[in-house]
Image (tube, rainbow, N blue to C red; front, side):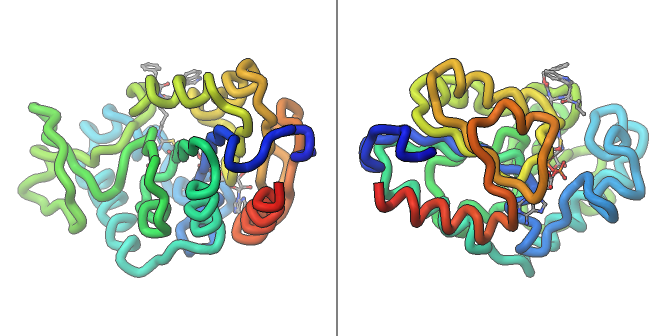
Amino acid sequence: MISSLNKKLVDLNIVVLTGAGISAESGIKTFRESNGLWNNHPMETLASMQGFENNPKLVHEFYNLRREQLKIVKPNEGHFALAELEKKCKSFTLITQNVDDLHERAGSKNLIHMHGELRRIKHVVSGESKYFEDSVCENEWNVYRPDIVWFGENVKGFEDISSALSLCDLFLSIGTSSIVYPAAGLVNEAKKAGALCIEFNLEQTALSPIYHDHFYGKASQTVSEFVSGLSRL
Ligand code: BV8
């Protein structure tokens, strides 16, 4: 299938969308698998402004725990393979729904955190955002919120995302259930641009039929193997 690209790797414009599945083998829980992050609380109570206003304690504790976890997890082969791929193609845009910092730590540069970042908080009134890697303490639960995109809030970087997709030759979707929009719909933009669209997951998703090809298996293996194959283009 990749031979249909008719381009050398060095001439390819590549866009990648990642979800929680690429960080699963680093020990970060996904959202929707059994015993996932949202098992005990419906996502609306943890990832919405309404949920935050109703119970800032619960929401801060949810994000404090996940922020603490960043101190003990490490990028896996899937993250490193994407950082390597970025060095070898004409243009590379990594769009992640993940709020962890494993892509940065693996060496990825051109990265858009469309759902925000665990290691940033923002002032609830001014909206000013700052880097933060500890736990938000109780006396600041109503002053700061996680700089995370919740349901009903606009995603980040959408202009840059759209311009990258308009030039895209190859679109890879890795480790996402393709349930959350507008992230799940990006493949349609890539297809309009004439890109070859490939899905990497453990299993089929609702949007699998839209993709031209699929690699089923653990992202740390499937992505590394795919990148090695691309390097022979
Ligand atoms: C918005 C907070 C405009 C961050 C999250 C149509 C168009 C536009 C909007 C909508 C629409 N329809 C509905 C909406 C509204 C809503 C939405 O999409 N709802 C869904 C539930 C239907 N979207 C929004 O509200 C978005 N904003 O549209 O703005 C707007 C403005 C005002 C009013 C209306 C609209 C905002 C969406 C962002 C929400 N924030 N979380 C956080 O806490 O982390 S969403 C949450 O889900 C995370 O961000 C996460 O990144 C995202 C997607 O989840 P996945 O990453 O896919 O994880 P999941 O567990 O689901 O799946 C993991 C996959 O990995 C599985 O398939 C599994 O098989 C696979 N896997 C596991 N292990 C491995 C693996 N694969 C490979 N290898 C492995 N080892």
